[in-house]
Length: 124
Image (cartoon, rainbow, N blue to C red; front, top):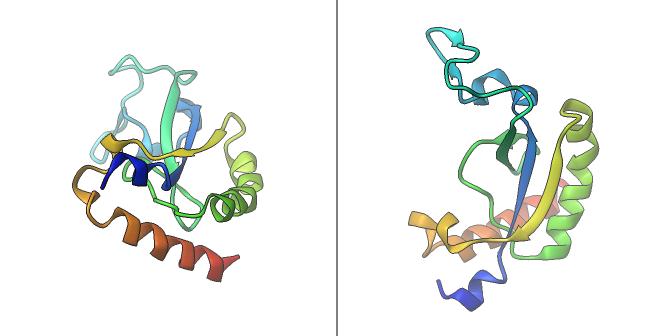
């Protein structure tokens, strides 16, 4: 995928306090021990980065692609009140996709974005 085509793809990213993240998404959480507070030097006030999935929930990696900016903004406006209620410290950002986020999905990113647009249109 070329750089000019990248400008046509969008993603929704969020930043929030590490303490507001669900326990299973925290960096200091392990399945066997639960939360190991302080082991990694992460404070609850530190900022964490995540993405929003198509069902409106947080996800740690693999951003979703959107082709239509207006549709992505409508989706953002639809899920924002729920997310603000669950995570008071959240800041949400709609932005263009960076080439580093495409990794192995580079060839099918545009197809994935079109499919995501159709899913959002059905859900809104």
